[in-house]
Image (cartoon, rainbow, N blue to C red; front, top):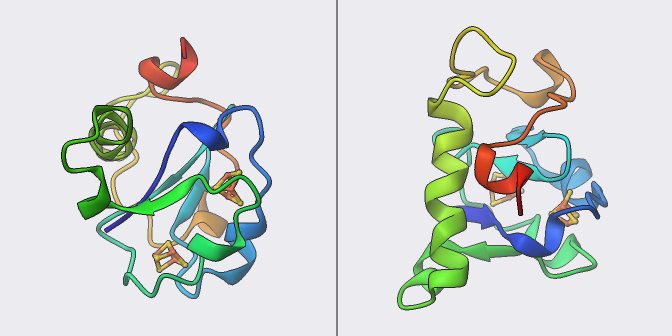
Length: 110
Ligand code: F3S
Ligand code: F3S
């Protein structure tokens, strides 16, 4: 699966959003998050990010600074985020929910 890491925080360039064929990149407040259930792993987003924030999860093996974002990206969709009453789950496209305006606790305090 593809994952967005630390470099996206406070940048959120959004170039990745334009190329994702399944609209599975969701915008939080300080960072964007790929829904790994919805991502078809086409890889189109990876070269588009100007700060190289996107990586494939197998590259996170043995690299804790990346691995935390693999876990955190799953948490973004599975946990009830601050200010929301239910987990986001798999909405079927970021366009259906718009910008979320909230981050995981880890990203919020990063
Ligand atoms: Fe973030 Fe890069 Fe996309 S900064 S919003 S991952 S283009
Ligand atoms: Fe979209 Fe990137 Fe996955 S373009 S389908 S999030 S690999």
